[in-house]
Image: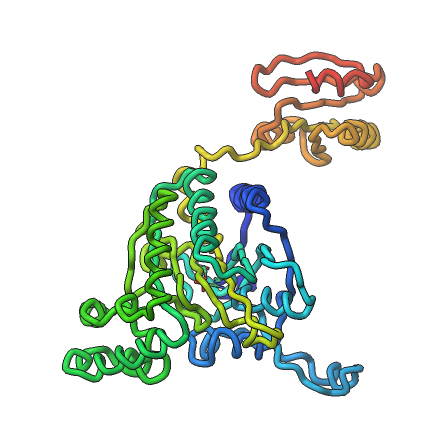
Amino acid sequence: MIPRVKGTQDFLDLTVFNFVIDEIKKHLTTYHFSEIKTPILESVDLFKRSLGLYTQVVSKEMFLIHPPTPFALGSAEGGKKEAICLRPEATAPTVRAFIENNIQLLPWKVFSYGPMFRYERPQKGRYRQFHQINIEVIGSDSIAQDVQFIKMLDRFFHETLKMNNYALLINFLGCFDDRKAYELLLKDFLEGPKGQHICVQCHDRKERNIMRVFDCKNPQCQEIYRQAPTIVDQLCADCAAEWQQLQDLLRLLSISHAHRPTLVRGLDYYHKTVFEFVSPQLGAQDAFCGGGRYNQLVGQLGGKEDQSSIGAAIGIERLLLLLEPFKDQLPLPQPPALHVILPLSTGQHTLALLLADTLQAQDICIDVLFEGSIKSMMRKTNKMGAAFALIIGQSEQDTKTVMVKNMVTGEEKRVAQTEVADYLKG
Ligand code: HAM
């Protein structure tokens, strides 16, 4: 047996997965978002330029694709080899699509969902192929937009999915200048006496991408970072006012949240508002949704002018882990009642085929068992959870009837073949 690739999953029952997708589509329509789809393959440069060269995702986790050389050389591409990869996230691709399709009507409110790929060390809730629902508002600068966006997510989790086992963490990273000034201040702190005790990896992060030190899980480092200066205390006057407004509006809309000064998010493009929905039930990988404001990405990726934007992605696998214990309480769609046709010998196969075809054409859910003895077919029909077994032997064939057996009560009734559909429909 060739097993599945490490860090990937087989989904054998998509009921809850599809329920989440159907519900978020309905929910986002209410908030006037429209659905888009971008390719799974993208240029490596797109992510180098947007997520940042020193982020974990770009420096260590990209699934690079090598196109087959002879084909590429012989093709119309003239042998030019593109550096392509499997997308690790969907914000940069959405921004690329925004620029490439010359979208004019702002804000552009779109969502997409599908698989993402990161070469991470697999563990509970962390996969190499995972799925995200990605939601973006491109071209809106208002703090009220941030609050509406967060409320939209919170309402989805709390009211649609009836979740109450999570918390919303927020932070405010300020503008570009605030972030730069804060990075210098943090560097001073980490080069002082307290910073001598941070781990080797944090020393490395301090040099390359200093705000990422906060993501370290080492308890000793975490204790040190609790004493570090916080970015919200270093904001310029405009950003300080926006941070205050953000908190006031969150309160106004009754969105319970906690300020987490060390929440910086793992990707370089964020400024100002950042947030994560977390649940202790997920263990170490506790965020099932994360996002924030990114005001310079459109310009960075070649757009004519910058567009202030905000977005988030929901990790579907982590959401499914949280929904698992109470999935029976969700209003999941019920599958239609199943009926199984049992032709007792090959002589009745044609009749079984025709009857199945007639019933399926009337949207009645039908399966046919073409193999096995009557005893084993009945056992299988029972296991399949059928409502009725439709038995066709020689005598039923001769009399143009079907023996219809109620699988719950055991009651049997001979029904004319022309009347089976009406009988099943009740
Ligand atoms: P992210 O925090 O990297 O943000 O991912 C968002 C969510 O995807 C995480 O909170 C988590 O639930 C899920 N996730 C991430 N990596 C994995 C993994 N290896 N296995 C399972 N689930 C995972 C982004 O991707 C940003 N693009 C979000 C965003 C949209 N920001 C603005 N717009």
